[in-house]
Length: 78
Image (tube, rainbow, N blue to C red):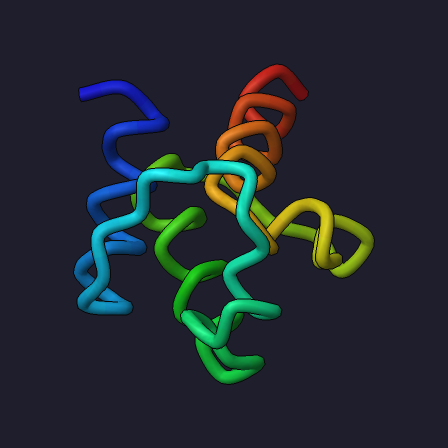
């Protein structure tokens, strides 16, 4: 399973919504809340054996499927 497929599956399970627009802001569209950020960070760290630093936590990195995928791929390269 690709990073995109895995992230999409996780977000769709978390929100109980089908997400077709991967650029859509999940917070502005009321699919995720600030409390979901902790779950999302935990998901990334556990599934990809990565550390998400405070500097990585922002709306661009965690606000959309594309942003999350980009963050995971960036952290995997470090």
